[in-house]
Every structure is written in structure tokens, then in C-alpha cells.
Length: 349
Image (tube, rainbow, N blue to C red):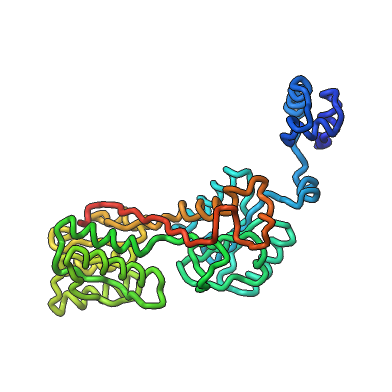
């Protein structure tokens, strides 16, 4: 391997002092009144020598590493939620940062070890993420550090950090509006178990009820089941055998819709001629089903982008904000940012 090109090599090639070369390459040439000729010689020398700054030395000097750590439970390994990682990566790159990713699988010991490792590497800021939208307690080790919550919230009346979550309440309203505008006003059943402790189910149902109420429509009933294909199939098949005659099914996610499709097909009910089906999440499954499934999309990519953007958008060199609040960027008081969930209209309505 050839020896690493140093700042001194660049200065010697350009015929300037080492400090002048440093001022030019770090953008401080204007303040130091360095001539345009000298600046051009330094830039040309850096290109010819293929000079790259020693980031480790710079981070030791400035206490800024230009890195962000995204810590999640199972977000990174999920095939759909992994798009949030892509969004976070894109935002980090746009701000000249690297994104480190750690996954805990919900184990507090692994979480503590990962946070300690990230702190030892002097990462500048953290994104604390969850696979499912839920309330969390921020780990004590992260207190005092710039932090944004991704797909999770705290129960504090005065949150200390920005949080980025999907707008599930508005998604429920959108689902109701979509069905009503398509002419469905009676025989609309919810499929799934909108348990109070499940954030997405609770918010989606509340939005549905508000949207239907605004149009003078009521849900005809609920076909309760877990959020997986097999229990959904069993529950819908049982309801059909008992004489339930739905005109539309609102499924709480695409896996539930998959089970409902099978039950409807076995009962000889055509989609959408006999029964319309609408769902949430817009996973790949929605486009694979036949007929293709209308679904309200979870904006994973936008969630990841927004979380990192809140950390880095106003931070300049990526260092700590210096106010000790640990709330992340200079983008105002900590708040909950709800990301829109667009409807993907397909052939099931």
C-alpha cells in the first residue's frame, strides 16, 4: 500500500504552509484572507494527490465524528420496515454523515451494550426506533444526547425529544372516506382485533369511526381476530357461515386481508363485485393478491428520512447542540411529527 497522503504533502505540492492548506480545505479561507491563487493551488494539489482528510484525527480534535446511530428492536431485519433504514441512510448521506445500525431484538442487555459501544465510538446523535408504534422509556444512557424517536413515543406530558410516527388516525379517516366515496354506506365490517393497547389498531379504529360519522355511516360490526392470515381466515369464514353478509371489509393489516380473501373465495364471494376489501400497511402482499388489494400505505422511507433530518437539518457540522437538552436538532421545541399515510387504490374496491 502506498503511504497515506497527508495535509503536509498537499501544502508542499501547492507551495503554501500547512495551516494555509488546512484553512482552504476546511472552507475557512475567506476569514483568513487567503488569495484566490493560493486557494486554487491547494485544491489542485489535493485533487492531483487524491488527498482524503484523516477523519479520526479530525474527530479527536473537534469532538465531532459525523456519525448517527440508529438503535432498533427488529426494524433492520424486517423486509418492509427496512425501508425506514434506507430513508435514514439517505438523509445521513445528504448531510455528509454515516449511519450506524444496531438491533437489540428487544433484549435490554443487548441494548445497553450497543449504546455503550456507540458512545465509545463518540457518535454525534441517536435515532431510537421501534418496529411497531408504541410507547417507550428512553434508556438512561441516552439522556443528554441528541435523540429522535422513530415509530415510538413517550408518555411524558412534556416530551424531551422529537418523535416521528405514522399518522394512523388520519389513515383511518382516509379509509372511511375511500369507501364512502366509492358508494359503500352499509354492511361495512372491521376485521381484526383493535385492542386498546395496540397503538395502530386503536388509532385506525378511531379514525374510521370519525370518518364514517362525518358521512353519517356506521360500522355494521367487528369480526375479531389476531392480525395474521390463519385466524383472519377462520374468523371471516365463521362469520359468513353464520349468515353475515358484508358489503365491505376493512382489514387492520394486509395479512388479515390475505386471510379474508381466502375465506371469501371459499364462500363463493367475488371481490369486489360482492364484497369490497380495504386494508392498511401496503406491504408487498397487497400488490401480489388477486385482485390487487387497496391499502393505506405505511410511509417507512419517509419516517426514516424525517427522523435523521430532524437530528441533522440545522446542526451544521453535526455536533451537539450545546444546550444540554438532548432534544436533537435546532428545529424548535420537541414535538410529535405524524407522517401522512397515502391510500394505494387498486382493484379490491
